[in-house]
Image (tube, rainbow, N blue to C red; front, top):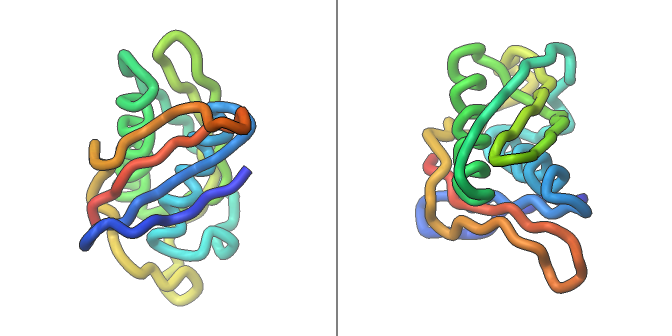
Length: 137
């Protein structure tokens, strides 16, 4: 499993790659956290359930990331660990994290939302899954 950022004008692309679609979604969520801070500095202390539904995988990814952005905003927290299950157009997940500690986390930006730009969820030629989109910062 891996995550990375990719350049996109003034915004930032987040990409997750994993052996399964679920792992790719989880890694995209780690990439989302990494836009704000180093995920290694976020302790997985509190579990937050997250559910989404969408008619296809791409829309499900956008809904998933936007649900996490919402939870980060209303709870004033960051997440570093994710467990994702996907089936029948539904995502059921748990995100683990902790309240923002400005001194330790040193948040760089606030993510406003996931977009449809460069949106893709697909299997790669090597069999792994990719989940990506651009987030508005």
